Image (tube, rainbow, N blue to C red; front, top):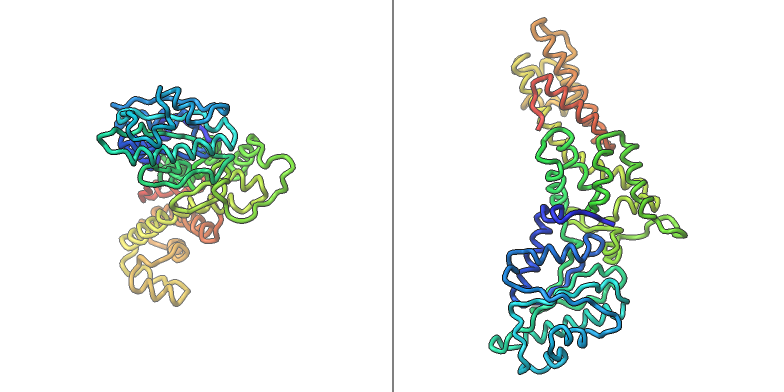
Length: 404
């Protein structure tokens, strides 16, 4: 189960925007059904939405769902008016423009009762919309539920009823924002690594984020073990389930927390679920994805800086005075020394140079060696460990090359 405090969710822009949109809809007398999946509890999400400024002057009317009491009768008791009459007779007074009904506990009842509340909410929203403003709106209904057992029971949205898939509201950028906030404002190597590497790994799973926070800075085997342990703690896969994942995730899988959808990647299986079901390639692929997006631009910038330094040390023609062996690469460096690759630079730096330049060339050579190894690993789709990135930063610092 995905966990987190209210601040964890509110720090993420898209999720915060979702809460604001739902609060605005309720304030404008539109009913709202929020599907939460396994992302957040109904009580916590309900409190987040109700705390939005748009609802500051509105009063929430809590309604605890009871499987033995149908929606019309329960609402009649709460509102002290015949709720079924309100649906068909616009002359019955019910000025609820400053109130809204919060339906609680819908995930605790059976599928039939949950479906009845969904259907009732849709009818109530239409009836409210049909009333003239002079006759007073019906108070809108706010339903937060996980919908893990009854996927497909949610009614269609219309002008009076908004549906919000909260479980799909988080992007990789949101998770990166959360990682930065959890880092407490630090911007060291460990924090930069987490910000780029963790979001592709964890999706919207805050529990998994917590589990891999420290292991992501160690050996890859330690990180992989942390993911496997997270799956084991959740009893994934369930006893008796045959290993293997067939096909892409469905909406029902997302509602149960077995998968997630982000704007950047679309629908993907939860990493812990995938590994528990025998998908051994997903771990390396997602880890590489975050590392490549982070490290490859840094490595290119390091390469440019070294090329410029060699121009100062060895002269403007250094790239052709010690030419690369590849004809195409020679053609490129003849146009600009910035086209020089790490292998070419390493060969140049290992040549005999005047004594006054030897120490600096030696330091640059060590940086080129580390950068070249990292570049080759990533070029072959192999993820690397945090220690390799930290070594790159150290070698760049020694050489006076800034790495951001």
